[in-house]
Image 1 (cartoon, rainbow, N blue to C red):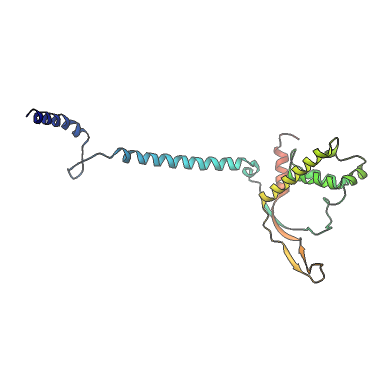
Image 2: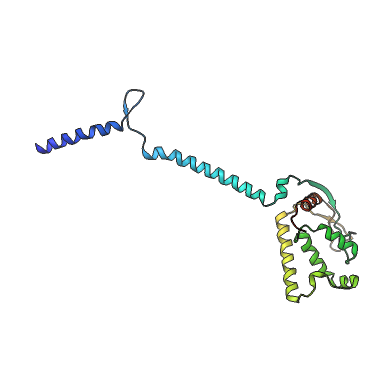
Length: 212
């Protein structure tokens, strides 16, 4: 009997607590409140969506800030035929002269660039001709031993490789069948390319540089 009375008293004590956590639906029936999981999942989903969207925007901002010239909106594309034949006359080709050096120097942007790396390799090739023309070695090779020069040249070549792979020019190269050619065909290096307008970029860099 005592056991029965104890159970009745315990159930009576628990009834008010149960009433606090009972909801009445529109149909008048008592319903249980949403579980903890049901209440928290929507919040977690919203937080996940927020952080995903914020991370994407942050990545996009960081991506564009890598190259301020892109944000400047001055990038334009120009299509033109590149004259790339062997022995094609060009102010950038041939043994060093005042004219060729002036032309190359106009291409440089900042302290380092792909153009300056290309020019350094060019001067290595024409080192003897440079000294014959100007009477002194190119500044890139003054007071440097062979190991240091080789390191610089190797670095320049690697920079050129990385730049070529980064830009990845996809212009097709035409192979022309020609019975008079040594191999019965030749490569037509005079091809139409769609390129960024280099001189617009060069002008923007010159106007926004922080040091000469």
